[in-house]
Amino acid sequence: MDGELAYSTWPALSPTPVVLVPLGSTEQHGPHLPFSTDTIIASAVAERVATDLTIRGHSVVVAPALQYGASGEHQNFPGTVSIGTEALTIVVIELVRSLSTWAGRIVLVNGHGGNLAALTASVSLLRGEGHTVAWAPCTVARGDAHAGITETSILLHLDAKLVDLASVVPGATTPMSALFGRLAVEGVRAVSPTGILGDPTGATATTGAALIAEMCDGVQRRILGESIDPRGCLRDPDRCTVPAPVATEDRA
Image (cartoon, rainbow, N blue to C red; front, side):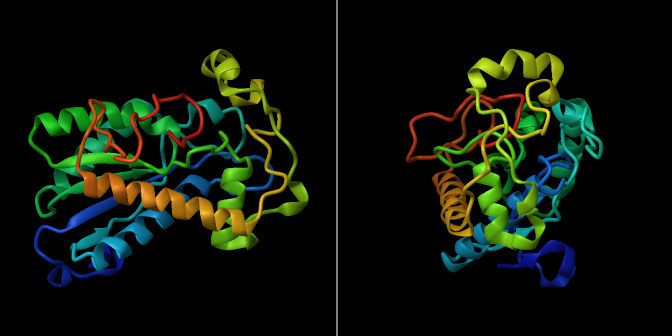
């Protein structure tokens, strides 16, 4: 691959490369995971997918991650930094307009579900302007919602020192369909004092390795499939539908 854009020089870039842009957040992830969890995961997925696509003969560069997202549902927890949907929409629009002056295809690799409304609005407008852009979610088939076994296992695999195992406790395990109403109005803290939606106990690095491999395979399939749904999301050819956006954590 062309590498990481932040550490490259302009003469080193191939003409019109595929550009992967990781989108994350800076938000609470329970008492045991860092605020940058979504950004770490989206960046790892983008980097691994870029490597695999390069092996297939594609010219790929990974842009610096966007570390602030729409995280209003977590704002009641200290440390959360949210720029909101409206601001994120504008940032993505201007980001892609700039990238389009030299990039070929642009794929926004999303690691946070709260970003979905901004992605849908911005990508729709950008595609209407003629930009070759779409987004892809970091998702697994049976992941839990937020700071549970899915994200905890992946962080244990990527960098175990970032996980405070002594602080791992079960969170709210009520199905998201039953929690959604309160979450939308009152935020995560109203339904989970710890900020965890799911149960991270039992998370392992081995499980995390399998989960991130599944995420990477899914994003790569979407990119190679090149089919885009009405939200601007790349479809997974191995799945019939793309799940609808949710207001809480990602895996959409």
